[in-house]
Image (cartoon, rainbow, N blue to C red):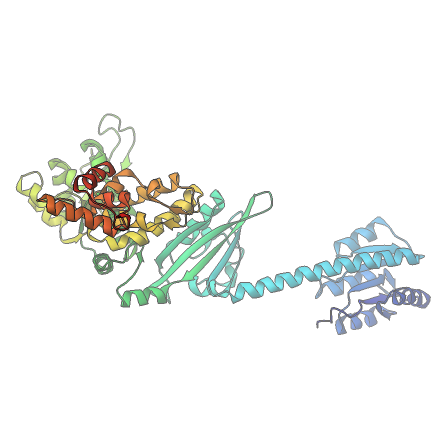
Length: 575
């Protein structure tokens, strides 16, 4: 039952002395309060259950019952209404028991009007504060439940404090999960939610993960985006975190149907070539076959390996990565296959190899073209026998591992030259996935630029809104020999040097500007052709000589000499 906010406060006075009830009623009514009275326990309990009161005064002694029993009965269904005890014989035990049961205060007989009204005003202010807080909680709860995205909050220790119905639907949690540690929650996304929340609590900063596929018993192929934020007090101390889970499944399905997904796992691309790659990854992810990823340095071969693993049935098992070019032959053998204690100098204890660590999952062998002939032979045996032998131990160990290898080298040429075993090559290239270089898919540059700007805004604490048209033209004119990795570094360079809302050419690395200058492919077989090419560049740039020079691929001083040599004059400047 809810009272009108403008109606007077309702007060119930419980006392078996008629004259005291009369005095209380007269004093309180004179202040504009709506006062009811009860002479004994049963009458008081009946009135309390029938109506809503803002304040209760109750005598400690009520015939054969006590005011403490009234208080105890009220607290069974009402925790907010303040109760002030009236006593003629106050003592420590009575006061302690009253406070334990939730009494607001107590006053002693004989009651003085001034003291009575002061206690009443104080108790009613307390009740108003409690009601406001309850209303705020109710409103927040309504907002919490009305949000279509999943919301989950945890405290500083990682215990779940609340989540809404959308989170329950998306993640499969039940009401029994409230109060549980996030480590104990069922995580159908292989724990990605838990890891993101844990990092937010530890580092005290927001995290984001876009478009990941999570496994749900009743929602196969569910795609979600995650974002987390720390909850902080005014001193900046983290006392919890909140996570937003956005269902992207319909959007992802639509993009798939249009063959135009902008992102796939951690890869950003809209080009038709990369859309084909995304589709091939999804197909290959469902089979255990060995995959050889080919592509220039910086094209994202490691990201493709991650996507293959996370899109398939092994995604809840380990993904182990090995850079074969970064280790010497001896170290690589020990890392891949493991060793037993004492098998060589420095082997002070047993070591489990990467193949065993990846058991049930995927091992990614990057730069596979750099391994020695001896390592090639050992790897061939693993592929053939599906077992490994640790250094110093002749006992083979069976492993269930999917192998994904990658190289930026021409393995066919290395086979022809005898540098790479032909039998291993054909074992590795059961399925080949070739990644196009960035210069062959330049339509992917704008979305990647936006993505990297957003990432480095967070990393560097900047607020860059984007790049101007000249910068984008320069980026699309450049051939990017370092591919996506070089583009990422270029964006980091821009954010370090730019403090303005939009980046200009002044903030772009020099090698990219040189690429932009080569747009015009300036080369002339005759002076007449040379003059026509310069005039075309000047007309195209409205005689902006700096831009024309960049377009032609020559420096500004050379352009000025050419203009003087051919006697070229800006049209509107002619006399």
